[in-house]
Amino acid sequence: MSGHSKWANIKNKKEKTDSARGKIFTKIGREIAIAVKEGGSDPVNNSKLRDVIAKAKANNMPNDNISRSIKKAAGELGSINYETGSYEGYGPGGVAVIVEVLTDNRNRTAAEIRHIFDKYGAGMGNSGCVGWMFDKKGHIVIERSAKIDEDELMMQSVDAGAEDFVAQDDCFEIFTAPSDFSAVREALEGLGYSFLTAEQDMIPSNTVDISDPEVAAKIERLIDMFDDNDDVQEVFHNAILPEEDEEE
Image (cartoon, rainbow, N blue to C red; front, side):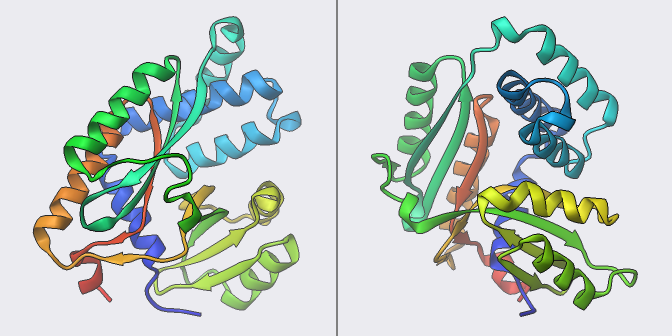
């Protein structure tokens, strides 16, 4: 399989809206805190922490920042009280949206997420209202280069336990079951590969092509508002926006 990846475009669009790198690092720092609280500060014995570190590196978070975040989390275990949460709803044009959060005040966060859905989208729904349109998958993206042999990478990925390997024009996408993500990521990392993306994502089983520029602008505004919320960790949606289609 090769060509144009709609999911890669969705991912890239989401990342473009996260333009403030400091905010990205803060959000990853929260994930590190949760991982340390659940499994300790030693990455060797904490696979979840290893996964978050890989995500941090894929987002160009400096090693010093990662180390400081781990040490800070280890020293503040008693005060770490973040809860995970997920909210679902619809955006303009019938686009399905899932918002994942880490919060120390669930009531506050729920009210803020509902407000954004109501103001910029089509409203927040009940749990599961759009979740059935997405599959949770481990998602690893490796930049295509002359140094990487496509067939060799594909075999290495499959041997490590990957479910799917997709060769794109500018990258290779590797998908895994959630339970196999760590093993596949670590196997490829051990072979010397570096990642553009290495995390677990919600992959849409179907997408919505948005051709109206006004609707597309509203969707981007909705995503921006979610990304700007300190409690929001990830925003997943199934929109294919006009400028992305034009690149195909």
